[in-house]
Image (cartoon, rainbow, N blue to C red; front, side, top):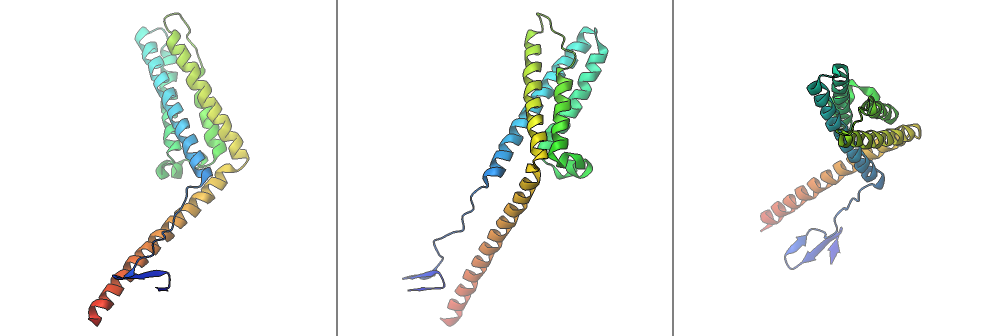
Amino acid sequence: MSRNGENLGADGPTRSSTRLRTRADPLLVVCRCFSLVTALTALLCVAVNILSAVRSFKNGSDVFDGIFRCYAVVIAVIVVVAETEWGFIIKFWKVLEYWAGRGMLQIFVAVMTRAFPDYSAKQKDLFLLQNVASYMLLACGVVYVISGILCIGFVKRARQQKEISREQAVKDLEELERRREELEQLLVAESV
């Protein structure tokens, strides 16, 4: 016999076997995956620009290119941090909260990575890495700009808030269930 959704067995009241299951929002999963790809691509740009800066300073041929690459490294690190959506960074740079702004920054880093290609037979590998990193980040930036224009970022933030609210409600419900079980055990203990 059941009363209010609980199963009565030989041991007395037991917890209902059905649990609240929350499935992941597909849009949030896609956004997280794309954010990971963008962060990894920006890290590739960091590595490529560091290699280019080291070669520029090592050869001493073009100090200005080395300085330019150092700036590209710093801005690419900002792109990586923006992809983590760290509240501290977003608080100070509100433009990174909006996808169009984030995409423009990524496009800027892609252009900086691609600028001043110093192609020679010795640096063929570095030139190829520069091309791959810059075009990948350029593609990510274009996707961000288009998604920003289509207000996908706004939809994502709304769904994130909904997911956070749902998770909090599940935690509160589990806490209430646990507390109810404790009170029932106290009631059973007092009645004996």
